[in-house]
Length: 305
Image (cartoon, rainbow, N blue to C red):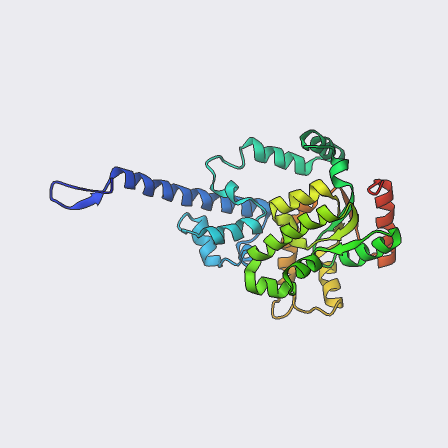
């Protein structure tokens, strides 16, 4: 049933088409409201969300007002920047009243012991068996993952692997070229494959991953299930200083608001990083001091037993 003709012979939309249009309009309004609410709950200015998602401020304003018919690809970028699954923004159930999201929020704020008990109840098998003797270091760039991972691996006599090096071996090109050729989506697919590969080939190891891996739900879920995860923490200023000390001036080049953006990214990911089994603050610490702290943490938590 497409068009019907009125008594003057003019073509009009059928009832079914009108209902479909109304449903689309309702979906657009619902997505806009949820994006706005998620952004406000995260405390992220629209301008910062624009920078992290790659969607223009004007488009975001239209989206939040229920006037922007955003593409699936752009909406996925917005969802990732907000650390929300895209289905939470589009589904019929209100994500802020659904039991699933409420449980997830309660899990995020629970202490480590309670989270461990919940995981033990929900996991398909013993968590210790799944994680084996694998350790994964997570955190923003500049936290010390590569430096401390390599030092700890040498000290403990176990392999140290950087996930980006695995991706480069798999693709046969530098990560920068992977991103240029295949975009963020292609990189994330290779990243997920690399995680699966190291799980299959290493029972004992230390792995360092890129800071944004926590925003990819399925890949991060695999990390949490198969590795003892440690969040290496530092302040935004120290993250930036360490990256620049390595000779990389890109974070600040031509971007006077880079520090504000970095703080926003750190804030938006904090709840995800906090899902790690353990945390280690490297702020103001020399590498050798942080190494001693990391080794003590690994032994105290019996991650390699």
